[in-house]
Amino acid sequence: MTALLLAGHGSHISPRTAGLVWSYVDQLRAKGVADEISACFWKEPPSFRNALGNLCSETVVVVPVLAADGYFARTVIPTEMGLEGPFTRVGQRCIQYTRPLGLHPRLGEVLHDSVLKQMQVLCAGPKEVAVAVIGHGTHRDARGREAARHIARSLAAKLPDCDVLEAYLDDDPAIPSIYDRTDAPVILAAPWFLAPGSHVSVDVPVALGLPAGAASGRFRGRSVYYLDAPGTADVACELILDLARSCEPDIDSSVSRSGGAWSCFPAQGALHLWQEVCRQEKLTFGELQLSPSCVHPVGGGRRGTRVRSAAQLRRLVREQPFRPLPEALGLPTGWYAETGDAGTLAAVVETVYPGALADWSADRCGTLEPESLQKVAARQTGNFRKVDSLSSRDITRLTSQHCGRCVRQPSWNGAIPDPNALPCREPCNFWLSKAIA
Image 1 (spheres, rainbow, N blue to C red):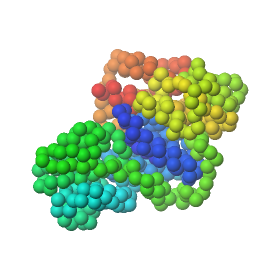
Image 2: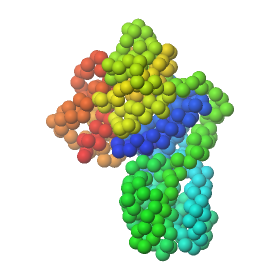
Image 3: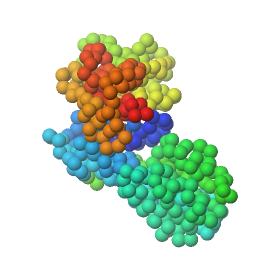
Image 4: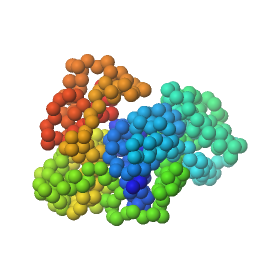
């Protein structure tokens, strides 16, 4: 078996950051390009750390859905996943790690085409226009600037009569410096981010002097036009496949493994869950009621909206309103999904509670391996390393405040959880973020 795993950043603020990655997953599942296809995130579940445990495949290809080969691609993901480089062997499993999506040369062509199209719409000549390529950047790793810098240089070579600049949200030169570095009356701001999340829709426009969400405006006497994030282009999934195929030929859109809307999901724990549901006839999983033929929120039934795809279900339970922690209590109701087999049942559960099924199965098999807060802190390279200094009183308070609002119960803090609850093997990113706030 072969798995394709997309690694993105995620967000506690906007559904569009992880939402773009999940849209890639939906498209790739529809094509049946691998036996298991999923995503993992830094800010949302399933986490980088636990995502490999959700898969049964012997071969896993991990594609970083990131714009740059910087701190997250080079440090965070490999550390969290235990990767040793482009090729890692763990027992019988082979894990291959590709270059980030943002380094694919064709993505730069997407941006170039977008610039030319906007210039044509504006009837603006090249000497009237400055193109500002805006990356995220970070002071933790200077290599985070390389992708945006490379794109800026490539655009400058193709548009020799335009001013082409680079600027960064969290590095130097900063975004506001654009206005001091060019006299062009028209500025095309080109975000070198993949997803239209909070950085693209709020932070960058505000730094440009535009209202949040604005596509154009006037600032400091210039006409500013804000281009789309390149990751939204239709070609993105093709580029992901291209990166994956470069190290694993078995991942191929010509090999159809698709059996329907709920195929190619992570398989770890799927058969175990099916057997338990069939044995008990009804099983409560978090705030879900499971039977061999149907999944619906506890207290509901076969009424409301019939869900027919993961994308539809995700919109209902994660995006309207946005729930950055899918395991948070208060699962939206008024929907149901028909199942009838182990794969479909597991796929619905995985969509509602990403990564929870594998931990549930491991816990009941006695193989769950929790990681203490100290172990989590020890592998951190950024701000989360501070959690190592938390007092026991702080840990108890944070756990009471935040874990009590979740269908998962901590297995990492030494407490004996309710045997009927969903286990939590380590403090999640949401908990860690609150701990250092």
